[in-house]
Length: 419
Image (tube, rainbow, N blue to C red):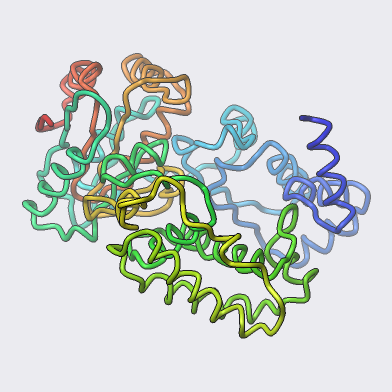
C-alpha cells in the first residue's frame, strides 16, 4: 500500500500537483536559503495575524518560528482547548512550546453563550474558571438538557430535542445536531446512509441534498462535484486520479459548460417525484441526463449501462430506496469538526454508545471525570461551545449517571429527559 501510494504521489507531482505540506516545506526552505525574502516580508507586513493558531501543524509552526525569529511581529489568536486536529499533525504540546514566553492577552468574557453553557464548557477544559457571560444571553437561566437514551442512537433523540427547542420559542432553523462522527448526528435525526454507491444512488442522493437547505456548504459543494464527475463519466472522460477541473481539461470539456449543466441537471433530476417506482424514476433521470449531454455535441456512453436500475428495487419507490436521506426530523446535522467556528441558538451534541475504538466514549468520559486532557474531550468542548441559548447532551444510559455526577459536582444546572 505504501509503494502504491508513493507511486501515485510521484505521478501527481509529475503532473504539477503539490500538497499543502509540500508548499509549507518549500516556503520554509526558501526562507532558510534566501534571507532577502525575509527582508521583503518584514518590509511588507507590519505584523502577521494567525487565527485558529492552535490547529497549526508542526510544519506550520516551524514556518511561523522562522518568521518570528526573523523579527516579524506575530499575533497568535488561539484557544488551546479547541485543539482537535491531532490526526492532521496538530500537536498541542508543540503549540504550547511555540507560544511559551510570548506576551499574552487572555479573554474571559463570553459574548455568545448563556451561563449554563459557559459552566458546562468549563468542566471540559483542563482547569480554570468558567467564562463570564457578557452577551445578550448573560441573564438567561436555561439549564443544560441531558437526554438519556437506551440502545443505539435513533431519531427519537432528535424528535425530543426538536420539541424542546420549539417549546423554548426557538425556531428549528436555528438548531443543529452535532457529534464527533457525522453518522451519529445523522442517526439522531433519522437520516440514513446511502443505499449503495451505484451511479443512480449517487445522483439521486446528491440532488436530494442540494435541494435541502439544511445541507451545510461543504457537503453541498461535495455533492455538486459528485454530479459534475458523473457528467464527465457520461462524456467518457477519465476521472480517476484527476481533479474535476483537470479531468475536464484533458477531455476538452468546457468547465463553464460542466458547471452550468450540473446546475441544470440537479434541478431537473431533483424535480422528479420520489414517490415514483424506481424503474420509472431512473428512466426519467436518464431522460434528463440525455437532454443535458446532447447539448455538448459529442458521443456519450449508453445511459442504460452507466445508470442501470438498482437491483432488488422491485415494488419500491425511490423515496424508500433513498432511505430518507434528508432525515425524519427537520434538523440540520453535522460532525463537530465541520461545525467548528459556527454558532447556533440551540445545539444537541450526541455522545454515541461505545462499539469500537473510534467511538471513544469511554475515553472521553474517563478524561472528563479525572480532569485529564485528551483530544476527544476537546472535540466535545468544541461541540457544546457552539451553543448560544440551549445546549443538550444525548448520552447512552451506560454512562449517564457518571455524566450526571460530573455536572452535579461542578454545579452545572441541568434537566433530564429520557427516550
